[in-house]
Length: 406
Image: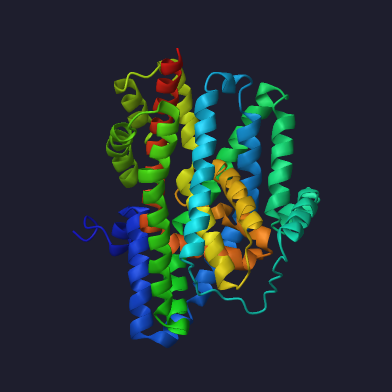
């Protein structure tokens, strides 16, 4: 009789990751309230989780970007060039919206910065100099020291070179990418425990003001995503079609966005988007390529997440950001978003790359990633809904725009 009834641990294992994270969050808050001294000792659990993220992030960026470029088919872009342009324009516009919102409503986070040296850049010239030096860094050194700009540069270079290699080589690289993604999934499975330790120790040490910062940060993130979905994207569609964009926008949000919100996976939402594209009467040869590609590179929500969290860290550390540097951040965030992993919370692992522009070390950047996991219950769902619905929206806008020209 005992064997037939599942234990508490088995029931917890059967829950979704989102539910487990919520339980970890609630348990951390409860422990900080009931036993603050005990809660402080859970800091070790949080440190282990942050260290694991720090370990997997550099190799994840290197392998995923290299594999995606190496396996890109020659001539593929000639069939969907207008859609690719809209994808990139929408992602960059989302990053710009996030920069403006972060400057209008700056967020503060509770970060542990003791024993960590932060060298703030003096301006755009210093940022560019640092950028160039990071690009030409030794690849082994870049991976060891989490120099994400150098990692990205070498990944792009190696990816372009391997595009001319044999099919077997590219298949091996694809398998390697899948293997790294599997390890990342394993690390993220421990997010509930890591968040429990981080929340409990942070609240016990810094008080419950930290929660206010998380609510403010989440409000900025969701506000940016709503603005992009209901204002920025319709403007882009209107520019392309020269007619009222909202019927198409609302259809995409209703038919694709709501499903993606609950599945929290752009890849899992591909069949929904393909069916919607068919019902909208789009060309099958076009949407059969653009929808799966959009699930990989059309990442307006990810660009917002990367930008807002990076600027929250910048504001917390008292680093001044000028307009040219903010524009550069928007470009970097858009590029990072295009390389975001398909796993839940994949965009969060690219935050250190953007943080490196401002001289923020990996130790602090990974704490920001952990904060992202804490608010990720809503953030990741909204991000996926924006990303996936925009895939259909821009595909439809480009197809209808080409028909109008014809």
